[in-house]
Amino acid sequence: MDHKTRPRIGLALGSGGARGMAHVGVLHVLEAHHIPIDYIAGSSMGSLVGALYASGYNAAELDQIANLFKRKFYLDFTVPKMGLMNGKRIEELIYMLTKGQRFDELERPLTVTATNLQTGDPVQLNEGNVAKAVRASISIPGIFVPVQHEQQLLVDGGIVDRVPAQVVRQMGADIVIAVDVSYFPKQPPISSIYDVIMQSMEIMGKEVLEARTIQADVLMRPIVRQHSSVMFQDTPELIKQGKEEAEKYISLIKERMTEWEAANE
Image (cartoon, rainbow, N blue to C red; front, side, top):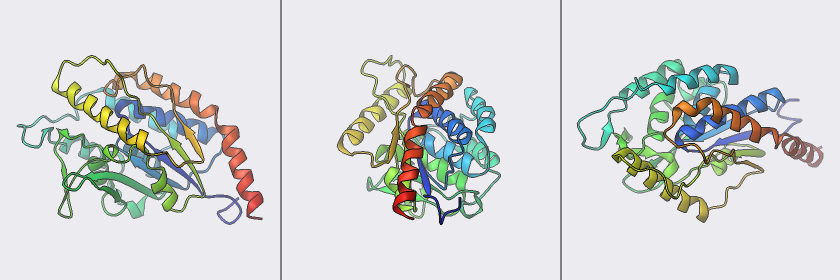
């Protein structure tokens, strides 16, 4: 089927740090069941996975790339001013992985969400260099130095829009599949400034999600609560959790597609 005879499907990939590796598992299952993805919107870690998929990698290739993040070579500590890490290394890594592509060169339309640190407003990035946009979207305040973009200071998109379902709807999706990998741990081990910042982000994200319903036709929530948002060494298990969750929803996705086709004959 082409766009004239089937619904356009959008995928909204949420923030969650290392737990975002579950998105890779979801992509595995969507591919296996031949569910087409026409639009992608991502926030924070969801923006990274979304950008890699939009740039042409398949799910199996993303498995291999995910293992890179078990290592710490991309962390470049700096003298604290606006963040503990400069962020240049991670941006260079993303630039390499996305082959230096601009948004208009991607295989699938992509929108990356960030937050304007000065106004608190959500910012949608879908033009220019993909790596810089993703770098902005994953810029956890206090951890990464904010990204300067058109007279704006941009930080992590998950602060105000953890699961950008409405964004991908606005891109043109008829059916929105959203993946929420957020989880609020009530008594996590806190022993460093990094832990303090990450738990603060989890608290803010919890408030945002409770105040806003995720407007999706299919909402997946992989069981990732036993994994910390910083434990990238758990990537294989997180991918597995994403697969298991996605399998539960294939029938519903196909049902939504059939309903759309019947209503648009």
